[in-house]
Length: 122
Image (cartoon, rainbow, N blue to C red):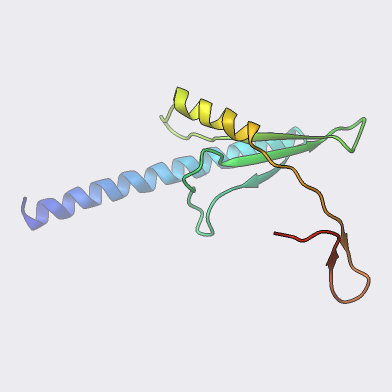
């Protein structure tokens, strides 16, 4: 392979990766919009630069129950963009992730200039 062919091959795959990233971000944006219209608060689990991590969970949506505000509904999402489709393995991983959620509690107090927590935050 000549240097020119190698450069063309690299440009082709970098462009494909860029388009896939843009398609995924677009799908995530529309998912957040739809969920927000239905009363959910969304948290995206992207890196600081906007890229996805290796995990199966891309988005977490939380909604408070209207009748009993102490009850929260938490939904884990994997968002696919473009022509990408969900595999059975990914569905299994997502359902396992939902079963492994650890829920804790804490209280934050701010009596003066600092914040105190009831339990250790780690």
